View 1: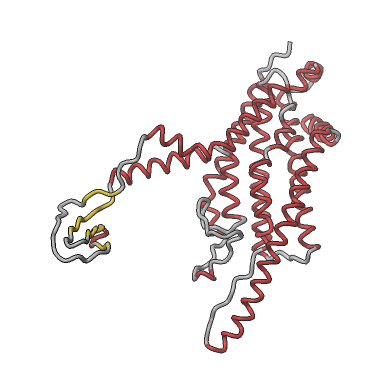
View 2: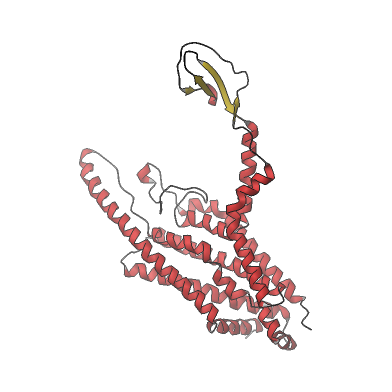
Amino acid sequence: MRSEFIIAVKEFKDYLSSRAFLAIFGLLVLIMIASIVTGTGTYNERLSTYNSELTRAASAASNGSTFQPEMPSMMLVFESFCSIFVLVGWALPIVIGFSLISKEKESGSLKLLLARPTFRDSIINGKILGSTAILVLSLAAAFLVGLAILLFEGIIPSGDDLLRLITFFILVVLFSVAFLAIAIAASSLAKNSTMAILIALVIALFSIMVPYFSDSICQVALGTAPTAMIPATGSSSSTGGSTGGISGPGGNIVVNYGGGRNNTVQMQINPEYTSYMNTRNSITEALDLISPTSDLTGISNVVVSGEQNPVSSSGMAGAFNFRQRGMSAPTLGGTLPSILPQVLSLIVIAIAGFAISYAKFIRMDVR
């Protein structure tokens, strides 16, 4: 057996006996169970509404109505889990990774490990492989518990639901691996485990808070927004009877002032305001992309909630009701390209974290 796999197996077994890991894993399973139970209640209420609408639709069909209600998706059940996991899901990978290297330095076992005829890259690769394996297994166990509860409740996923669930699981794993890479990087950079977990927690809190402060950052960087509406070029005023209302040709707006005199001023959107808002939106989106929690939120909007893009909102939980509003429901294949920036961001964060860990460990002085 290659030395990487020997080290990976050792790390895997060590985690199974770690109280901190078992506590966080137990919390993850409890969150899944509580979320699924809550989501099942919401799903059953929506299903009852669907059955009532289906009965009315059958009655209306005799009058020529073609309306058909949309059956609620099983993914509705996972929405409450998503809202909680994006806030606390980073805890499991951080607990797994923060002491991966620092504990070896503190105990002095790293010197003994490096004294053996084993290459340094084999050691770090084995540690990363073992920690990733236990992380993926933990997430898979939690998802299987949730799926088992659904099947016990008689909720059978459709083909589209199952595909969405598998896709969401893969992206949750990617999100968790990104935080695992951050934790391992902190462990390799810090002198001890206490400093490592502090670094990892600061990065995790930064990730959570960035979306809340992105607008304020833009306000400071760009200043106050220009006036949204300005008088159109060549606009004129006229007097006459009061007409009231707002209208205008060519996309412009004509503001009518009543009260005996009718003063009309043709208005248009300020080009500077449009440029300002485009720049502001670009900065906000870029800031949100560096936040793994924001990335997972956008991903769950598309994969779990069935939205058309990461930032859209239908105004209803589990929004697979587009046909009820005269719209065609977006397919998973059609909406996946919209989350490509979020997926690439998570991949870049994971690669960067592992690269820092690798480079630091290879050059580490353990004397």
